[in-house]
Length: 154
Image (tube, rainbow, N blue to C red; front, top):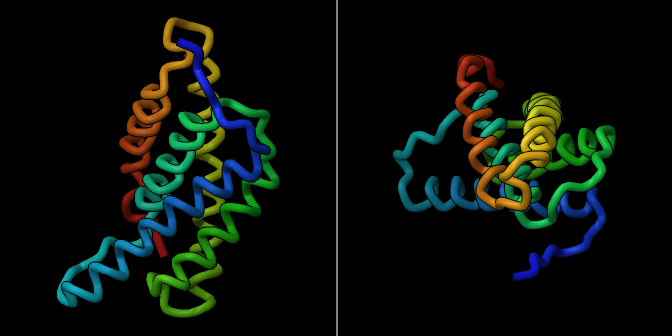
């Protein structure tokens, strides 16, 4: 069976998946705060940013395949997404906290992107080439490794 992938520019695929993941997470937070006002939402820490980043990157790798990476565009897209969407969802208190979230989120996203794609490049030469589960497993392992930075946050 022939594998079909959607052809789209790398920056567009990145922006679509990152904004989709952050939008769903923000929507979940708003719904949880609305219907269960006593709920304690997790803080925006490095593992939280890493989980959102790695989920978006794994979705991008599984849906759109491996593309040539553009690091500066990735950093800017992540800074805008991590700055604007948590502010709109009410996860950060003010604009200065949104700038801090944008900076921390963009750095975490870029590091996760570099590490995940280096792992996927190494695995692409072996027997797991074309397997859509591999990005999610590699992302899970990177998220577990990011737990060492659990105290670092906004």
